[in-house]
Length: 128
Image 1: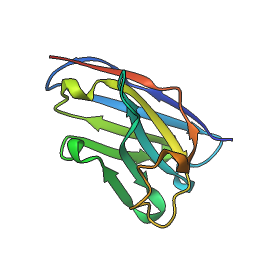
Image 2: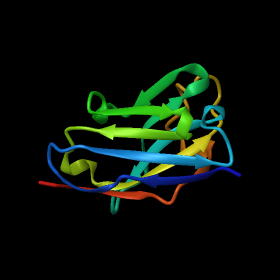
Image 3: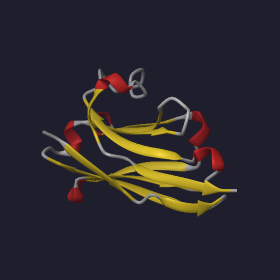
C-alpha cells in the first residue's frame, strides 16, 4: 500500500513562497500520477497540479500557472510543489494523492476519484 506524507506548509505573507513535499513509501512515485489537491474552509476540494512521470507530463490549475511548479525527486521518492507569489486565495489544506490515470492524464488529472491514496494534508495560510 502506498503511504503519502506531506510537509512544508505554514504561514506566509502575500507574495511569499513555500515548498510542499509529498514523501511516498510502499511504491515508486514513477508508477503513479501524483497530484496536489487543496481544500479551503467552506469550499470544495480542487486539483492544483499533477505530475505523470510515465508520460513526462505536468498539469496546473489555471490560477496557479506561472506561480507553482511541480517536480519529482526520484532518489528521495518525493514530489515537490514550489509555490511562489502566494495569494490569500491560496490558503487551504493541501493534500497529495497517488493514482493511476488513463493515458497521459490530460482529461483526468483533476478528478479525485482516480486517486486511491491520499496524504493527511498540510495547512498553507497566506496572510494579506
